[in-house]
Each structure stands twice: as structure tokens, then as C-alpha cells.
Length: 595
Image 1 (cartoon, rainbow, N blue to C red):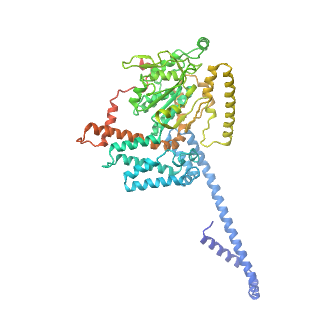
Image 2 (cartoon, rainbow, N blue to C red):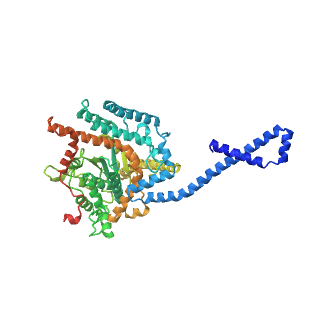
């Protein structure tokens, strides 16, 4: 619409123009004839003409500007879309994503708090209450509000749809609420109060963390596709969003073990060493003594497997520190979990960690978890006693196989042991990736395909049950059913872009070039998920950090006594100094370095 003053000006100018074109004789005729009705008609007609011209001008101007902006923005959009697909780090990707949101008008959607996908009224009310309590400086009221209303998915603000409308970020109200919660938790932790002691604060934050729940990162199996997990780990660590609880199955256990045996200061050095020539990951065959097809055929006929399990065990022992699960947890505070499956039908799958298998050597657990049937033979689990002597963890000599067979993503067990209620999954299994969707909102075609796939799997499982009841290949059918009936996705699922040519390298030794390519694929698959991961995990990570700080302050105050002049703010540095005294472990050891 044109403003009223512009419209009136155009209308007056139009009327004056029309009067200039009226003949003098006609004017005299109308004046002499005293025909008021004709004057009224002329005035109405002139007003109509001016109004039509005004509307036509407005409409044509609007569409001309729209067409011009579309033509100009199309070039800008394509440029930033290219940057989005070919970015080499998260900063480049985030800048391109923000530019695209601006050009496409997504910022208006972000600033508008209303949406049918979440309860914006509830979230706004909670934020207002928290802000009011912070402005008054009332710690007790702040603690009360956080303890009674804090939840990961308050008002359904974790809905994936809220992150599907934009390239980066979501509603500003959600981000504002989370930032307010984080700010208040730090205020409660750092503000000294006579009424609220360090013990009271520690109890409050511990209980709040327990009720809030924890996040676990689950790395699936997938042979050499598991190298993509390196990129996921790298991206989350650089963004300071890496969970403390990490689980790995099959090839995912290799990456999980390399990470959870390193401190936070050693992780960047380890990630840098991955794409260097020093990193030797000869898991299928020795580079100096490559297998021939004749040797593999002979092994298949004699042992029923394609590769030698001892080469895998030697590689794991060479690259993974000689640590048990308990020693790794004491050193890094990260909870490593590795799944293994039984080689028989008489044992349940196991989730190995510092609670269930504290003395098991990590490298042996990784080797067992990578023992894919028909590719490797089963492997034993080794343990270490107090004197450092190795022995069989299972005295009967029971052997274990690939953890992905029965328990690729051990969600139920993690929930029972560590109060995990939020799962970030990186899925690279070759038999699963083609059926997973990358978009947060499934299309109608995807929903139809998933429904048809469900029907096909249900029918296949029914036929397998019939064969099993008849006694036909019961062990094999049980393993196949276990693979088909598992859940292969989490609350946030990272699905990398795997090309058809990658399947040709699935059973070949990784090279520095393939590791670099896989790492970059993992990073690019993780960047679009950073916004939702940050909003889902920021409060939890803050709770973890605050509990760690308060425990250190309480320990310092207990050890130093009441007359100590050091204040509690120095406790964090004290703990870091103590942790730095732990023995250093080389990030990765090459074959030449070992020799």
C-alpha cells in the first residue's frame, strides 16, 4: 500500500490533469446547464482512474523489486551454497550458513518467537521468571526455579523440526532461554553466600544433573567407514560439545578407545597425528607383507575367515595404550564403552566399561569388537592384575565377536548404568546408511519407503522364525535377526555422505589420504547438527563443569582447613596441576617408533 499522503498527492495531480483536458465549451455548458449529477459522475470517474493508476504503480513496483532481488540474490545464494558444501572448517561453514539465512529471509523466522512446533508461551514465561530472579540477585529463588523447571526438552524446544527451517540456529527465544540458564548456574556457583555453603551448592547441582540426564556419543561399526568418526570427534571437540560418555562398536570402538585414553590436552595432538605418515593402521594385512588372493582363499577354506585376527590384535596393541578401562577413566574422566557379542548363542552381548569390566585391557576389547564374522575369527578378552600381568578375562577361554552384530548402539544399558537419556549417533554401517535420511523432516516419499521397508523386514523375520523353529541354521538365523531388529538411530543422528566408490575400499588398509578424506566427511556431516547439539547439551556440559569445580573447591577447603588464606577460586588450577602430574602417554605410536 502507498502511504496516504502519497496517494492524496497523486490523486490531486490526476484531478488537475483531467481538468486541463476538459474543453472550455463543455465547461460553460455544464456551468450553464447546472447539471450536478454529471459533475458527480466526472469526479467519481477521475477518482477511479487515479486509484487504478496508484494500485497499478504499487503492484508493478513490488513485483519489479521482487524480480530484481531474486535475480541478484540467485547469484549470491549459489555462491554461498557452494561454500556451504565445500567449506574446510566450521567457521567457513557457519559464515556461509548465516549469509544464506539472511538472503532467504530466515532471520525473520528466528526472531519471531511464535511457532506451532513448540510451546513458546511456556518457554517465554520460564525465561521471564529466571530473568526476574537474576535481576533481584536472590540465589535461593534462582535455585528454586532451576530445580523445579529445568528440563532438556522444556516445551518441546528440542523438536528437530525447529532446526529444519534454517541452515544454522533456531528460534532466538530458545537460545536466549538456554543462555539465561547457563548464566544463572555460573552465578550460583561463583557467588559467595553465608546462607548457601559449597556443600549445599554441590548437592543442588548434583541432584539437578541427575534429574536432567546425560548425553552419550555412540559410534557405530562400519569397517573403514568408521574413519568418518574421526571427523565427528574433531568437530565436537573443537566446538567444546564432546560428551563424557562415549560408546563404540566394531570400527567405532577403535576411535572411541583412541579418544578416551587421552586427556583433553592430548586430543588435539592425537587428531593432528591421524593424517600423518606416523599413523599405522594395518588392520587387514601388513603393508610390508600383503596377502595374496591365494593365501586368502586358503584361509577361508581352512579357518572360514578372510583375514588373520592376529594382525588386527597386533595393530590394536600397537596404537592403543596398554590401559584397562579403570585406568583410562581415572586418567581422562571419560567413560569408554565397548560392545562385544558372544561367539555362541549361550552368552548375552556385553557392554565393557570401568564398571562392568574394570580390569579388561582396552586393546583386547577393541580387537574382539572388530572381529566381524567371516572376516575375522573370534578373539579372547585379556585382563591385567595389580602387578601388570596379563591373563584371560574369561577363565573358560570364551571368545567374542563383532559388537555390532547384537548391540551396535547399546542405549538401554547406557541408560541403566549412567543415567543417559540423550543419544548422539554417528551411523556409518554400510547396510544401514542407504536407508537413513539426512533431513530432519522426512519427505512423503521417505515415509512411504520406510513403511515399505518395515513391511519387508517384518515378513523376512517371520520367515526366519519359521526356519529357526524347524531347526535350520539356528545360530546363523539368530545373528541375522539380531542385526535386523536393532535400532540404528538416536535423538540426533549424524549420517555422512558416502559415495558408491567408497564401498570398494571397505576392506582395505586405510592410508593417510583416506583418513583425511574420511575426517573431512565426518566434519561436514556434523556441522549442520552443531546448532541442535549445542542447544541440547549446553546445560548438561555446564552442570558437569560446575560439579567438577565445586568438588575441587570442597576438597581444597577440607585439606587446607579454616585458616587457609587461599580462596576457593584457585581450586580449578590446583586440580589441573594434580592431573598434569599423571604419566604422559604418546598420542599414537608408529611401527618404527616401537622398534
